[in-house]
Image 1 (tube, rainbow, N blue to C red):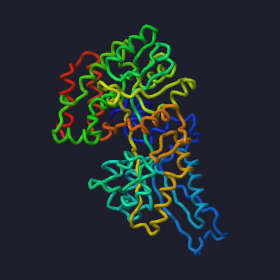
Image 2 (image 1 turned 135 degrees about the vertical axis):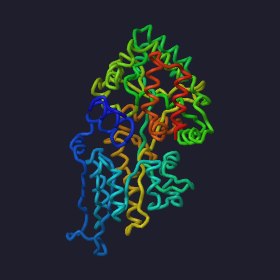
Image 3 (image 1 turned 180 degrees about the vertical axis):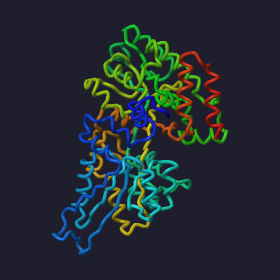
Length: 444
């Protein structure tokens, strides 16, 4: 995606492609993150705690576990999780290699050189599948799998249904709404279809509140918005993408496509006079300060909202794509999964370490309190951040669908966003947009 300037490029990559970058915007509560992100590669070795004075284990043997990830989140706090594991395992040293930049190339380089880490993180989907030949199969470890939400476990399955990786945390996106705006307008029930959404817009207008600030200047924002309506909920994200690629589905035949254009019409009618001049930062500022009631964004924007107005009361409005509440969902993805090297010389210890950082109280608190996202592991721990905590309620209720925009053909985001911009300004008709979207999948 071409960046208009350095600021937009950075935020576009954070919100569109790479889960590991999304935490960067949380600078208000992530402490020294900027230092970590400035490093192309950070190798951290936390010295073993609780050992004898020679650093050896009970059998007089020192053990080292090597790990690799693209995680820049709160590294100092993550080191404390590792330290606790080592204190519980005298004689064990965990070498943690964080590679927030170029992690795919660096991981492949290690694999090519025969230095496969004992535990390593990869993006779920086709990239993770490249490494399943090296992965331990968790399918028979049902006691472990039960610690996670079933939909999250599915992110680590291969084509035969085997669990080759374990999930880390969710990232969530959809329509966000300002609770103070809704209360001021007397909206007591979240709209579940476009008709109810239009009634809400009218009530907001009567109170002098702009209903939508969609960030129409950003093609990635609009393509994410469209993905809610392109997605066939009976197939979920991956199933919809596969069916479109095979020709089993067409864009025109998708069940909710008409409602995408009805929502866009509302966004134009009840939005700013020049919607394509609203970038992501302006939309979030308007939203946080109660000037606009709704935006399309994800829980990664919490810190930015807090910087504009720490008192803003915000939540997820599951996208009203159809006619009923059952059809409204938040799009949620466990974008990172972790693999244990099946040929590790310390296989059982590597498995134990991975389960510890994903499911232990210490590991879960790191995700909830310092990363501010929802763990894929089942937990009652409160999540830092109003949006992520709100998203957790939909995850627990099973009212989520997977992401489509990250697995669609590479041209999807820019092409889709540009087409929607053209529709909003009258430059393209609905039929022309649908045809252009169909061509994205036909070209593959």
